[in-house]
Image (cartoon, rainbow, N blue to C red; front, side, top):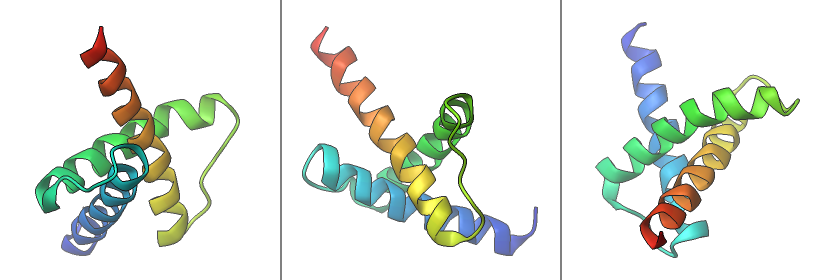
Length: 84
């Protein structure tokens, strides 16, 4: 993995985490928190979405949407666990 791929992954994670934070909680989590939420969400979506028959196409926008869906799922799961 080259430095360009790592930078792209961090950008996608930051944007996806920020979007998911705004959709679920109403605010972001700071730059580092957004990156972590977005990257973990992308991994989660990488397992869940193909199993459901959905796949992200190529490109940055598709990656951001894919990671945002996973990050929203992650944040909702965290919210459910905190309430239990």
